[in-house]
Length: 262
Image 1 (tube, rainbow, N blue to C red):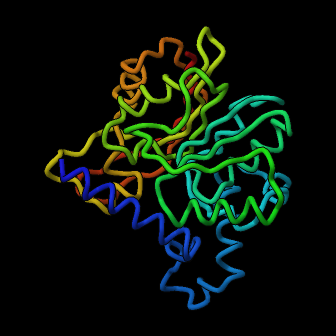
Image 2: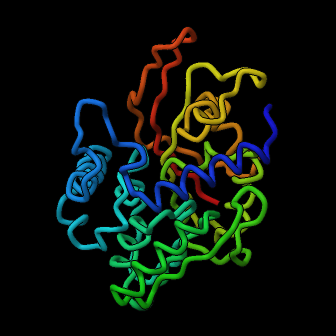
């Protein structure tokens, strides 16, 4: 595999740019000279979010600058978050899923967003402060090394198309397992991308890794990574085609929503 530090730095760089320039970093098309106007950037992010399972009412209820139009499936749609829950969102970005979950857990619950990029954290914290959220917190952390959360303390872990960006997926799932409450209380509900054919280590493209493509595992290996972390009760809640590569390898990328109980 390419240097893991190099890949991680590329990921940080990509998502810092998305935080700074919102969806304009990825939306501009040669066919539209107005693509990157503020209005079109916002419209593009909202449209992209709707296409992966967010509805208009919930998007209208949260800070608009938390909506970046990235991800593969809305995990809050499947997580069955309840009032009083303590929730962790891994790779929380500008805060879209944190703010949606915050409205469900109410003031007697809490939502913690974890991200490793400075600009995303700055944007999320600014969104939270401006809109007066009292039950959310954003922390910096590398989720495959150490999630900055206490052992056995979390009801629900959610994530939207982030874990495939990590190099050590088994350790990431071990960290999730560590922070979840035991005895069948804590659960993970995540969306992510898998592939029908994994890329050879010497063929990895850092840019495609940042786009959640070259870091993708097969469905079997992804689920095995979860099992190796200690999870036994694992269920695929949703599965649908996401992308078919036009390059020589013709990889097929599929989005999954997976639930696992500790």
